[in-house]
Image 1 (cartoon, rainbow, N blue to C red):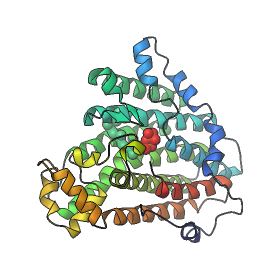
Image 2: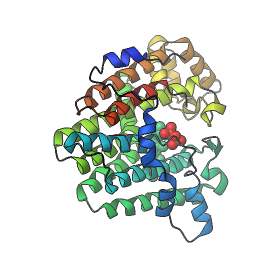
Image 3: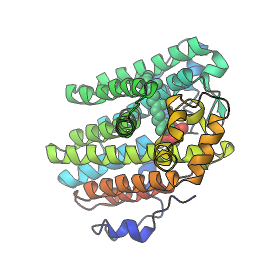
Image 4: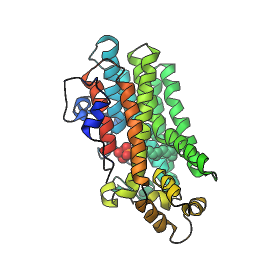
Length: 345
Ligand code: GRG
């Protein structure tokens, strides 16, 4: 594994980091997320036992809770920036809950589309209950998230977070299509990456910043931080699909190739091995394509280049968030960019 950003490298790009250092940036947000899953389950009150079991299935504490963690840290960083308030508003915590619910609904639907059998080391909802019920469970989680969103009672926040749902669907559609032209292919991949992964993080960050601070410049900082971290997160996800093992990931590896998808490592590898073009065009559908493409990627510098690109996005996220007044929460968000790059699942 080579996706390493040395601590000194990151610190040198964020000289504004305050003296207060935390071993684990997640420690700061943990108290806000203590009852996250219990509170989500309260939103999912369903009378039918089977639907309840399906909807609660992924709220078992096995996910990384990466999105709610960013959201609560961003909320506190913006509140401190605005009026030195250390309190988080109930509406901001609701955004963290809603973000995790939208994320989970999209995972349930994604697994139906991809016909996936395993996620987080356990069987998928579609594998256990079948596709039709899985679609309905995803719909139900999304509708419960919409109810919680309406309850906040702020039309700006509603439009910011409903944009995410549109982007998720458009991102999934972009993934179903492909581009013949090599240059267009990379732009298409980055647009898909923004819509499928980064929009949720960017707009959730924006939502809590709006709730915490009236300054539009702060909303833009929060959005840009979330967007850049979100894109980096997905680029590393795409790297892990080549470099990690299935047991560790909790899902099969080379899954993207098996789905016919050319992600960052493949697109970079193709510059070194143009013979991969034909495989990309036929979506790795010929017997042996997946294995050959995987070999090419690992022989090329596709993994390193994708990691380097992720580092650049994290650097940009750090640059943006450093514009906020120093606080332990702001610094935790800076440290979190390192964790995105160094994560192994
Ligand atoms: C129903 C809202 C809705 C959308 C339908 C299917 C679809 C459109 C969108 C798919 C979006 C999707 C699943 C993107 C992948 C994002 C991603 C990187 C997921 C993995 O995130 P982790 O690693 O997962 O944070 P954990 O398991 O830790 O929660």
